[in-house]
Image (spheres, one colour):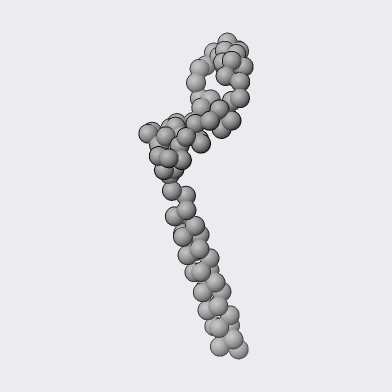
Amino acid sequence: MSKRRSARCSRSARGLAAACAAVALAGCALAPPKPWEKGDLARASMRFDTDPLQTKLTQHIYQSKEGAAGGDTVGGGGCGCN
């Protein structure tokens, strides 16, 4: 019975190791964009805010009501120059 349990644990350990290796190798695909790919990311359709004037108005209203400014964006840019 212990050999069967050992074989089962060994198989699950190998499966876990294979899954971890697959996840680690998948992380290599998340490389930053190349310089020639940045043009696609700079298009207006790739923006989070489709209407910059509406975004400014919303920020102004939030700042007026809350008495606080900032905290509504993410650090860094699409160009990789944080």
